[in-house]
Length: 524
Image 1: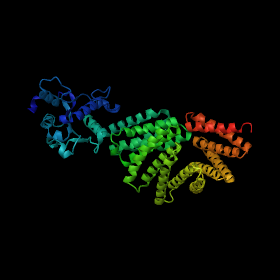
Image 2: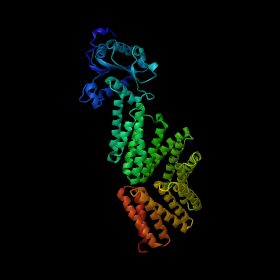
Image 3: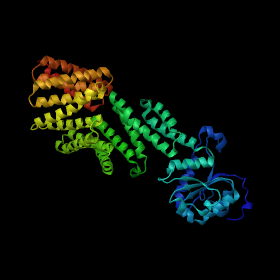
Image 4: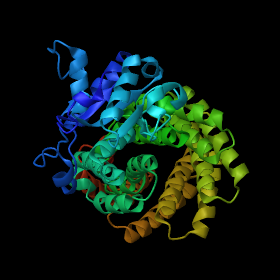
């Protein structure tokens, strides 16, 4: 590359020189742009930023970019090497084969023996991608930009840290904080509870490996959105905010370049988001959109189960997909198409019980599965006896659990729901007295649950439905005073629900049903 002595190594004009094979020009261009536009954190700027006012690190040299009009490109490259603080070598099999990359490394080290040389691995293994001069003398600082290595985000931050000579932890923490702020911006005030969790998450994982840090932080937020936060929003009936939560969580997975590279746990979370979004579509009455999401989730969970057929988490995840596809077809009055999915759901629930017979979560799944078959049987007039059998088997599961956990509000709600279906099954078989007893038990347990959680829209909804069912039974059997009492109570609770979310299609349908009941009682 010429005599190093004729260059002035102190005439620094570039913060870094990017050396690369032209086969890697696209990567070089992207890296060049991102380094020049990157801003250091405020507390690092005075010492490490070329322009402390905006935190930028200064100019980065990349040939054919900075000196396109130079008459002698080789001399321009030499002068740029002489005036650069750091050398960044983009390593690949093409770079290893390039005599120009090798000469740029040799000249930089001759001019600046003590200055940093950074290796950015983009393709191939180190032994087939690192140019030979790079391995001579001091070992270069390396960043692995490959998916199977550090990945682009962490690898880029390693390069920035090497150029600016700042701690990598400081950049990774700032990068994680910026990603969290993007999540917070979408959900706004409704997600204010995330603030405390975010602070604890950042604090807890500061000492971890940086690649694990980023994934754990992002998926931890997703997990919170899908569990605690979603439960709270569902309890107060806020479908609009729940939708934003779902969409924000889904955005995280959409940012992943290739779903096939995602671990099984991440794919399972993605399926759960699709379940949640489909459930919200179903509640708004958009069954076609809901079914599309459930079918996509079914495809993912089916593949996961095939990989690990004895894993309870995989069995449970696919059971949810079977249920939601079947339920949506049931809602579309496609009973014959719903039945295979409900049977498949029951079979998967049975497999869970076989693995862990005393696990409450799996016992509930059996109850839900039998309940689905109960509901299907009630849609077919020729099968009322089948309905009673499935309904009773479902109820027995929840009575067993309620005896163990008597103050569990969700169990109380589930048991009350089963009593309602029992009432319908008994009524379909002409057992009026048993039907009335079940409705009475249903209302009693829901009133107790509501006293424990007065703000729960879900429990209030279930109580309203029980009151509608009771009113219809009494009306049909000419017990009109009792029918009027229950229809009035149902209307009062319906008004309370509609004040929470007037766009909830299901609540609107049930309000119409109450109005028809009240109208049928007028003048009697």
